[in-house]
Length: 240
Ligand SMILES: N[C@@H](CCC(=O)N[C@@H](CS)C(=O)NCC(=O)O)C(=O)O
Image 1 (cartoon, rainbow, N blue to C red):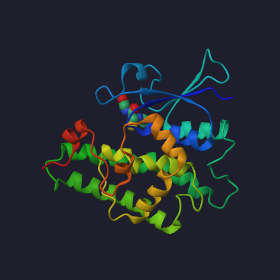
Image 2: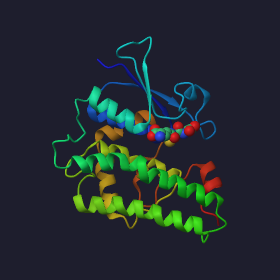
Image 3: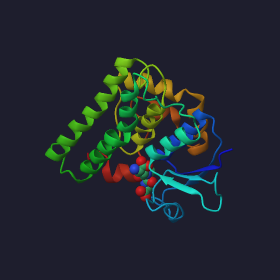
Image 4: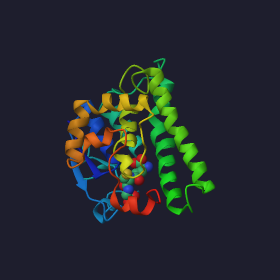
């Protein structure tokens, strides 16, 4: 029986790990942390040199010296292969293996850094015409359109017909992360339909109840998105 604890900084990407564990039906406990005021509190920083969430604590083999693992994609891979028997991953023998690997890494490799870059650039730009913001905005919109086109093509999930861990990794970018960097999804029909499919899953609903019970999940999947985190809206929100 695995002995896993997820350390999750609320309103953050750590929500993906409970989502994955619920999907795989693997038992775990969850330790919640509040932002202090925006970044990790000292108790979370002490868990791993990265000082960020999520951190997975695996005390299965040696409770006195648990494995402490950071990096969302690394944690997901670790869980899938160590305790999930490879479920929710696509094996190398499958024709969609390359699609799976690509989309599994896309959220944290391109989309999420792009969204944060746009937020930071907006915070320092002189106005909407600032060339740095224009460039970053164009590139980020390209990243979003790429996801939308993929979902329109599969008409199902990122790796193909089946829901996989690539979807688990991507969902937060279009739900909770929009509290930091808004995306209007009105024109992105592929993403909107896929979001509904993914977030209707019981595992998602269970995971969000445990990780962020106060979040409005309906607002998270609405076209206009959830309200921004106050401090972020002030520092990086669109200037009037
Ligand atoms: N590359 C890491 C990034 C982790 C990260 O930056 N997490 C955010 C939550 S969304 C965090 O903990 N921020 C608070 C801080 O850095 O102090 C991952 O993929 O898990």
